[in-house]
View 1 (cartoon, rainbow, N blue to C red):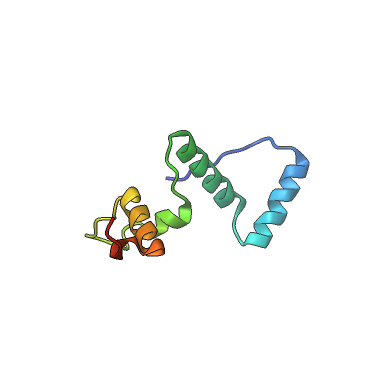
View 2 (spheres, helix red, strand yellow):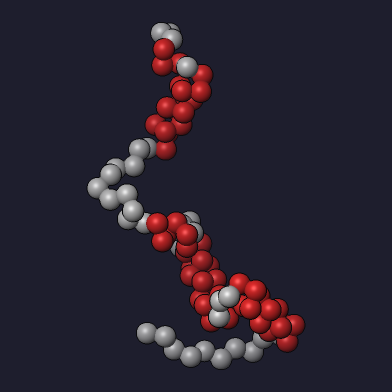
Length: 86
């Protein structure tokens, strides 16, 4: 549920917010809300961008490989180590 919030902000920031709002075709409320969401996620240790969050669930029922395993595969592919016996 959305609620109204009144803020006291320096006039130059208000002017910047209005300009940015028009250029980005977003409301000031939407910009502020996205900022607070990002701030909340950063302070809670979550590092998922809004774009990534929108993509969440596209690859369903598929386990993502381990980060170290992906690096190993890339390294092996790059240096053709999988065909060389050590």
